[in-house]
Length: 331
Length: 94
Image 1 (spheres, rainbow over the protein chains, first blue to last red):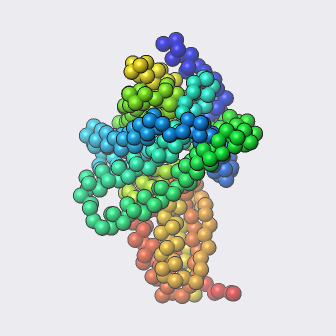
Image 2 (image 1 turned 90 degrees about the vertical axis):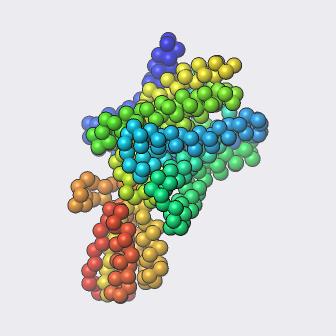
Image 3 (image 1 turned 90 degrees about the horizontal axis):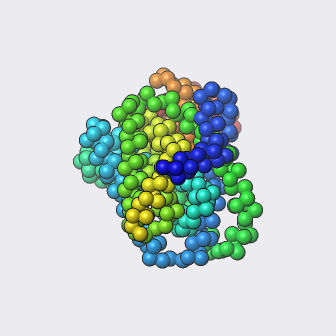
């Protein structure tokens, strides 16, 4: 318990989290604080390049091992299982129609890059090592959940026509070459190819400014989140509960999975964060195209207005304690 | 000549552009971020990283028969997505 409170205090007093809170407060008090969109996009590109490159450089040292292969398998399995469970819960307990249930499940089956980066920073500050290939798993987990959810909706609505298949192909094309997946995989490969020599060469750009840039980006995320929290009433208490319940279920499932396949505490925590986070970049765009009748107020508010701040502010230390417990259980 | 202005959700921009190309319009201009309020209320101005809360404006000028073809096809998109089309008579100076 003392460890949990200590981790929570460390997390809440980090400059990244305090800037995130500052952004939320700025939105609440209706400050005119506004970060130009082009800067936000540039910062998100920087963060993805930096995390992908660093992961690739570390991956070049360990290479492909049995742990890498099992982690890839576990990630794909979680990416497919989580939306199925979430879809079932939303249909049975949430009494949602298939389209809205599928739209929400897609967001929880996919993952959030910023939550992952914040978790990696949390581990670096705590001195807990993690495997470089985890970055590749983040890129791997973005799409399967979206496809699985779309299939679940089509099966539920008995839409197996050719037009639906054509649309799925279009979504697959859009999602697989979306900028975040492309950039994460690409930077990982560049980092892998250039190894530690490349990492040393680019350290002044990718390492030294990283935390400052993350502060800047989380300030903007705080502003976005603050604007969304007010939409709580649009989703209602029942769906807001699911925005807490689904990540909790995913965190428990992935913590046991990571520990079972023998990942370290650091890598298991990252797997937990990938599973418990909800997408707010790739999934909304794909779902808005594929399921236009689903209500965006539901999935955007749940992922960005509830799950994201919850993971950033209180999830990290809780997930860390859960991960430690699970990994020790299987040792 | 007629001018057609289409304000539609950014996620549908590619489909609109495909329609314009398939209808062989002379050309078009795109304004990538349009802020405003529609008749259903609520200001749409982006505010997320996925672009789904963002609107774009597409402008094209062409012969009336081509504009009618474009309007018929874009109209099908407007049943599911927010948007509006404005048609006006214009004189083109080239």
